[in-house]
Image (cartoon, rainbow, N blue to C red):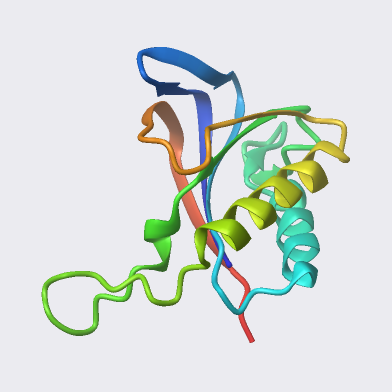
Length: 147
């Protein structure tokens, strides 16, 4: 499992010309599920995301989490994070979960995030999405959980 985190001032996701998710200050999460992921990964990664100290405190140090600043989360499925580019010129997605598992784990991951009493908006699994964001910092961090 991989989650690319971007600290944002704002972010929105559009599908077929309609905004389906929008947040202010918080985290934009791009989420990729691997075929060999277990449900335990979801718990570990969700806890890591909401507790990662990447927001500034009063002294300007990254010492607060999205929970501390009562931020929001926009969760987007993005299997392309599983791309293997070691060989050739076309990325291989063989490590990505099959769509059924990917969607199930993506939905479960969102449920886990919502248990932290944060506002969580989301994209639409498998849809062609346009993402607008203002990355604050910029701060972009990859969280990976594998065996």
